[in-house]
Image (cartoon, rainbow, N blue to C red):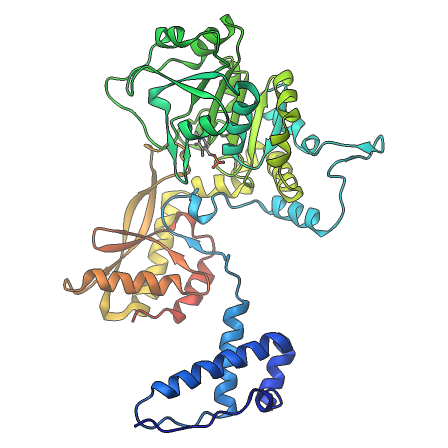
Length: 466
Ligand SMILES: *Cc1c(COP(=O)(O)O)cnc(C)c1O
């Protein structure tokens, strides 16, 4: 038997004191909508309820309305703690920006700017002008342009220089980057025909020579970002591809993917090819991402020969792929940090994270262990362990970064899978969600990217694992 409880009307509720306070804080329309939704939910609950249902007071209803309003106002896109061990994690937004870049973005967002206005002459300007010189200085290129991301950069190059023509690419480089960037698909969408050359593990200069014909628009090398072919392998060096292309009077293009602007060895990291390396090897155009190792906003940078860059800028697709003012502002500020390589690892968050010493991460892990162990209680064993993370976003896939992690292992062998599920779900619902990695019966929290220890600990009191 369900007992009938009459609920107050929407109008009466909106005149009650607790609701008036909510209207002041959240606005009349959102509060009214929330009251309606809460009442509808309660009515449904009452209809289904077996036995007695306590009468709902105005204060009870106001509490439910308040919860609903707070949840509705929370942004969908929020900060998380990336403890996955992958520093440049595409699903978690890749490179964190430098303070200088964030300030520049905010300034650009605030109001009008000289985005496409030449203050010297008073004439129309070019948005690339705010970054072109900086990019050229850092890459040794004659000219540069910027688009929405590197996938767009590759499409723009192919569509401008190779539409209705052929582009030979080594079979060893027909890559898929996560998120549906596949070289063969990008080729066909750009309007050009891919000519597969060589084999998966070995491609020789003669393979390219045989593939080049009257319809060949350009030669292209693709940095095999996210995998490596090992063993009996052979690839044609960029310098050789450049020679072959130039002998036929066609451009040589390199899709570099990550493209760091400095020699990473200087910072104790493994070497990663730079745009300058490709240009020195004879590349006519090089494309790379702004939010990978470069450590800036999402963007696709194209550098190289001035005549080819000018052609790209005339393609209407450039207009469709252009960067907004916030990106230009953040990119320019990020590039300026490179002027001072001595302080780059302090100022560029990506490089800072990549170069954090393992001893520091180990000490952090040891400091955090008691707080986590206390919060998780008997159900989990908390320990520290050395681990290996990765740069991510395709840079140096095989090299891994020595790091340190907290491992959270369910104490009971039975029901381990579901205990881990509850734990990862609980961590995801924290105010700043914590994202780790499940590996061999434990949740691993790689601490390389934990940048706010105090906040991490403070919110643990809200963790519930049930
Ligand atoms: C990452 C990558 C891309 C795609 O770059 P986005 O900036 O993500 O669009 C293309 N090519 C290579 C080789 C890459 O590594």
